[in-house]
Image 1 (cartoon, each protein chain N blue to C red):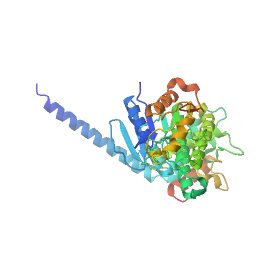
Image 2 (cartoon, rainbow over the protein chains, first blue to last red):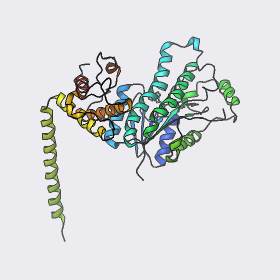
Image 3 (cartoon, rainbow over the protein chains, first blue to last red):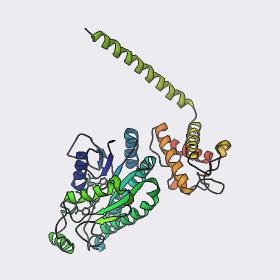
Image 4 (cartoon, rainbow over the protein chains, first blue to last red):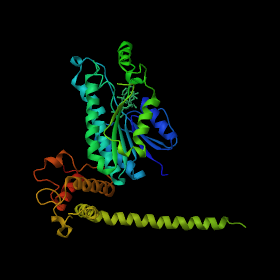
Length: 232
Length: 134
Ligand SMILES: NC(=O)c1ccc[n+]([C@@H]2O[C@H](COP(=O)([O-])OP(=O)(O)OC[C@H]3O[C@@H](n4cnc5c(N)ncnc54)[C@H](OP(=O)(O)O)[C@@H]3O)[C@@H](O)[C@H]2O)c1
């Protein structure tokens, strides 16, 4: 079997780092990116410094992939930022930044990936939403709105890309213990966990399990779907 | 038997072939560089259009050269075929000029006359992008 090429955004830490190492272990060639450098290296892993919301960074990254590998099998749009704040106290600049990373980043990477995947009439795109969308989490208005935008986007482009053998789905993790939620007050998180059917944090493996399902060759008939963890 | 001498001979042979190849390659690149940018781009557009034509029922009339209609009033392409052509041309131009380029950007969408009208208008628009004129 040909080595699958997997691109993971936000691979320097948290869920993205876990996924990068996980897919390396599955024999994929993994390309990752983030704004800052990684503190880890591995054979078969290639890291790029790129801001997902900067079009020139993104174009350059894809140019490199095309020249080096000539194809892309999987794109995992994991990079994301959050900020917990009452919306009345949220500066416009913060809202822009969240939308730029979570939504525009997903848009730019999906657009460039689709161009590459279309060539081989095969591809799997997995986007990242969150349980904060269906749970309508107070204090996360902008974050949740940006992740709701990711859901709509996923569902529409799933249709636009269906004829090219490309599927597009989204995973909506329940809270996972990473830096992303480190600043969120404990009682808020507990409150959130209480509203899940399974009152626990999600593990990295739970996220990987959903992605495994979406990217399987056999999942060719699964597209435009959003799968939430924890029983929402 | 001592095969060392064979090996050195061999590597020298390979080295000289490589040298020849790289010379030939840089000559080729040099020669290409003397061709005007517009010609190089229109060649790419026509080449990609030819390849696309193989998949199309309603073919681009490439015998009309630069005037061959693509998209719009007299165009033969539907939006999916246009996307396919633009993506293929974009990648080929990126390779030829060693640059990153987005053809379908807001500048293209806001041109008074659409750059996607004909083979020639597309090549002209890309030429401006490559030269950094827009
Ligand atoms: N953790 C949770 O509880 C949870 C729950 C639901 C959904 N999620 C989603 O899961 C994804 C991963 O979250 P995480 O918890 O692993 O977060 P994390 O630990 O904060 O890691 C985020 C990663 O994204 C990168 N990143 C951030 N902004 C970027 C940008 N503009 N360009 C490129 N890379 C960027 C970061 O690197 P740099 O800072 O160096 O760029 C880092 O590698 C996010 O989409 C998040 O919304 C997480």
